[in-house]
Amino acid sequence: MADNLTLVMAVIVVTAILLTCVVIYLIRNVKTKRIKKILSDIEIEKNKIDSSPVIPELAKVEAYLHNEKLQVMYNEWSERLQNIRDTQIPKISDMILEAEYSLSQNDYKSAIYKVVKLEMELYKVKTKAEFLYGEVKEITSSEERSREIITEFKITFRNLHQKFQDTKEEFSSLAPIVQKQFESISKRFEDFETILDNNEYTEVNEVVKVIDDFLKHMTIVIDEIPSIVLLSYNVIPKRIEEIEEVYARMVKSGYPLEYLNVEYNIEEAQKKIGDILVRTKNLDLEDSLFELKVLLEYFDSTFSEFEKEKTARLKYEELNTTFKNKLEKNNSVVSDIFVQMDDIKSVYDLSEEDIEVLKTIDEELKELNKTYDMLPEENSSNGFAYSRLLKEVETLSVALIKLEDKLNNSLDAIGNMRDDEARARQQFDEIKMILKDSRFKMREYNLPFVPQSYYVELKEAAEALREIAKELDKKPITISVLNTRVDTARDLVIKLYTRTSEMLKTAIMAETAIIYGNRYRSNYEGLSTKLNGSEQLFLTGKYQESLELTINLLGKIEPGIYDRLVALHKLKETE
Image (cartoon, rainbow, N blue to C red; front, side, top):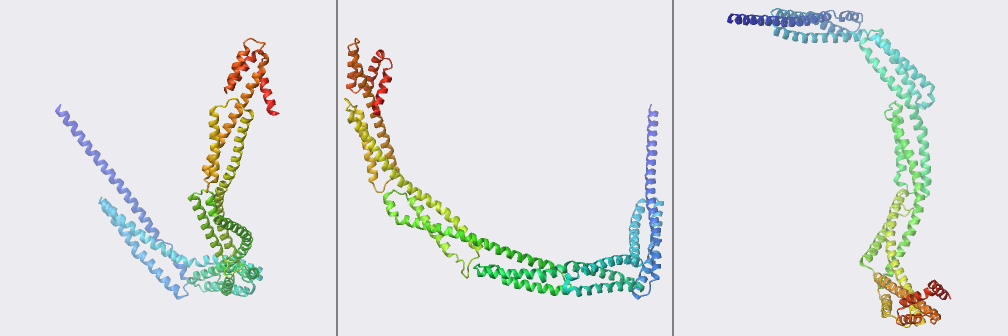
């Protein structure tokens, strides 16, 4: 059993070792293949550099070696190419061999390090070769490339010149200057042909750039000079003339326009236009058209300011008249109030708060008058523009409206006191008449008995009237107390009048019912006794009980007697 276990363990160990060896072999094999692939690619890239197209391009340059500058460049390029081929490429070859040797020795760490250095070296050499090729190609392809560019430039030149010829009148006196500039560009085209004929390819790019700059500038010249001429010689001068005419007319009409600085700005604008024209003659157009448009916008805005002032003047004159009238009216009202203040205070019990409000209104009104008086007159030498005057008067008008509201509230309070006093006096007279009427009715009907409570109410009503009279005689009058007295007296007197009317009505109806029932005394047994009881109630002032008793007795004899008695009473009242 132990021998079999040992055998199994031995087999497992041997198998593990074999598997480890296989794995290591496979890993090394993969690394080796990958590094060899990299070295193979580097070899290919090295060969590409060695067979660089720089050599045939340099051969083309040899045919153009007719000037010293190009000869120097050719020599320098040849040296750089020689250095690449004789020094740097062999160096790469040696480094490839060293890396392959390390790989053959299974020194992967060293091999990878050398491969990295090799890639860096290859990149530097490749970059130098490509850069060299670009420099040489710039010369060898310059003629073909430049001729293509020049051909496009000539098309642009002809189009610009044709546009100039078609619009020549718009250039005015500047047309000869522009024509001379076209001639200068044409001369540059001739210089280009001369350079190519002389194989001076190092000068080609500079000439092409100069022509390009000239054409770009000429495009701006053709596009902008007509507008500059139109604005400088026609539009803006006419606008200045119109502004001067309108300005003089408005100043003569009394408009204070000094704040616009029109005369100074016109002078500065004319200087600016002169400066622009001088620069334009030198074809220096930088910002010229922009500056002219700014000037035109300024003059347009000046016209807008003129119209604004005209509108403001109309509004100001209307608003100022309204404000002035309101101010004078409020001045008069407030002045009258303070002239009568002692009388008002003596007549009415004004609160300290009411008086303080009136004093505040007076102070604010004085300040408003002061501010208004400080405004310059319309035609004064230092007068405000109407637009500013309008704003000032608008502000003052708003303040006056607020002040008017306060004043009206105070006047309403005083007016209400006067109205309350007048109403109290009127109601006092009316209440006296009602009380008098109540007394007259009582005397007219001469009731057999009047309850003591009635005389108490009569006394209270009369006393309430005397209290009203006292309040009306007081100086100053306390309106709140007066109103209370009037309300109290009115309630008591109306209550008395109502009681008087109801008591008289009941008494009269009770008396009428007893008289009407007397006709049946002898016809119905026991009726006389009951009527006597009703009479006794009547004589002791129990009119309602007497009426009810009599009506109940008669209702059995004559149904509906109560309604007939009511109708009869109303008929008598009407009579």
